[in-house]
Length: 121
Length: 107
Image 1 (cartoon, chains in turn red, brown):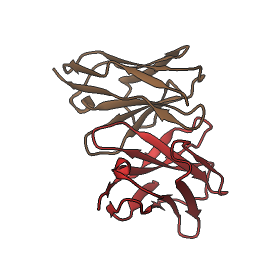
Image 2 (tube, one colour):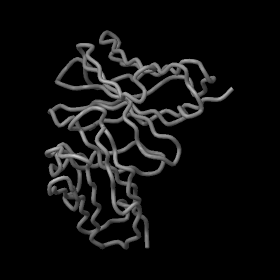
Image 3 (cartoon, chains in turn cyan, purple):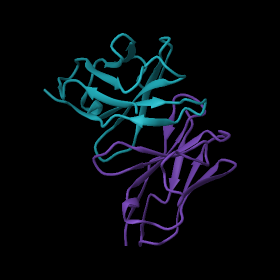
Image 4 (cartoon, one colour):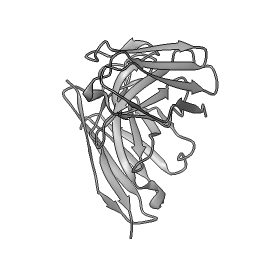
């Protein structure tokens, strides 16, 4: 079955750009009518939807982060990525990638295990 | 953004208890409501989507219902593995938003 795995630096300096990649295994990122999403969760807090991408490249972002977020997809590598610029301590969180779909109800049925990113000098 | 509230924020229950968690949305979202279970240090797990459809592999003791902008997750007979935090999420419009969570712990 489809599995997702996040990867990237666990420590990012303030004002720099956080970059994470989600690798999809067990299936093609291009097959089916799925969106591919990023969600984050600060320690001890709730979940925040960051944004998503369709394999066509179409994206939706959370307006609270929109000016700093870029989500891209590389179908040849079966990966999609998150870039969050100008990070501060408030961006410290566990970052999850997830699959949305396949129906128009856009539920997140497959999740990565999550990766912890700390923003600190 | 669509605002989500959940009640209670936490509850204590015993194995075998019937547990009900409520999620309320700030506007009508039809049935675009999903429920997730999260254990400490783990990713959320989809339980129910479209308000009442049980995800494949999820035990039938979990059920969901809706009434207007109120949505309910019910666990008919709480099992030891059900002690976790539960989140609702609306997928009606972006940005998708989650409720603040309900922590279910052992009485």
